[in-house]
Every structure is written in C-alpha cells, then in structure tokens.
Length: 187
Image (cartoon, rainbow, N blue to C red; front, side, top):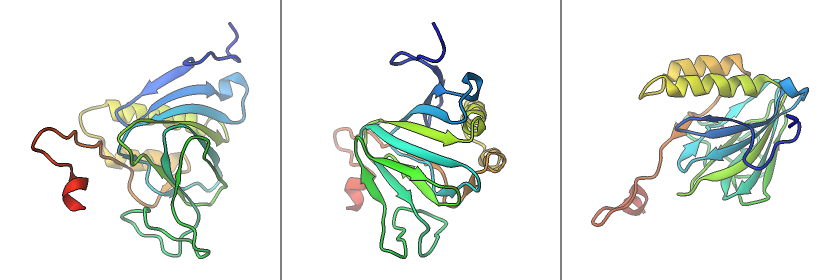
C-alpha cells in the first residue's frame, strides 16, 4: 500500500499522557505541510504561545475546544482564558467543524475544558518542525513520572515556540460518592 493513502485509524502514532498524535502527512512523504490527527485529553491546555515563522491550522473533528488566536490588550503570564483583543475578541468555544488559522506572530492557544477527549486535525507549516517537535516531546513525556519543565522549555525554543502562559495538563478528578470536584466546590 502506498504511504500517500492512509486508511481511517492509520498512520504512525505517538502516545503520551498529554496527547495522542497520529502522523498523516509528513516531509518524508514530500509534504511541505505536516498534518496530524490529535486526541486532546480532558484537562489539557497547550498554553498561549507564538511562532515567529510557523503557521498552523486546527480543525475540531469531535468534541469541543476553547480556542484563542489574537494579540491581547494585555498578555498575562498565568493564563490566557480571560484575554481580550483591542477589538473585543475573546476565547471561542469551538465545536465540531470549528477551526482556527494561526498566522506567524499571532499568540494562540487551545484547551480541552471538557471531561471527554477531543479529536482535531492539526496542520503545521513548514514541515518537519512539528513532526520533530512531537517526536522530542514524546521522549520527554516518557522519560519518567514527572515532566522536566526546563527540558520542555528548551525544546520549544528550538522549534519556534515562544511560550507566554504555561502548558498545563490537569485531568479532571473523577467524582465518587461523597466527593465533589474542585469545580463543584468553587462554584
């Protein structure tokens, strides 16, 4: 079978505690754009970041994501969830079919705020920057029980990722009889 036609569920997979990434089109196939199918687990927040030269496209296939793609009035270092653009734009909750194009130099982020995995199609130009990025982050995630934040920061710099707010992965705590989630307690 040719590697230019990939059946449903096909492609090389990288699985980490924070994401499942399936490579769909790569530089090795002759593509100038890297294309991935990504499963974003509940509680994953990529953190706001910016690329000087890369451009990206995100398309929600299943579920919903919070999406941000603008320069805010004020960049805060703790979270992007309440950012506002000079034109009044705010974070968008995008369901199936929602998409986001990210030109170079534009702060952007996504987060799975739900309790279910979200599936998205992700394209990145130029290839193979994100292919190599996903390979290296999978190695970092699999190297032990904790993630080395300094290693992640150094790796992101090499791949044209300037982090503004932290990457977070805080899976929801399952509710059992007599227990309440943080969300229920605080609100």
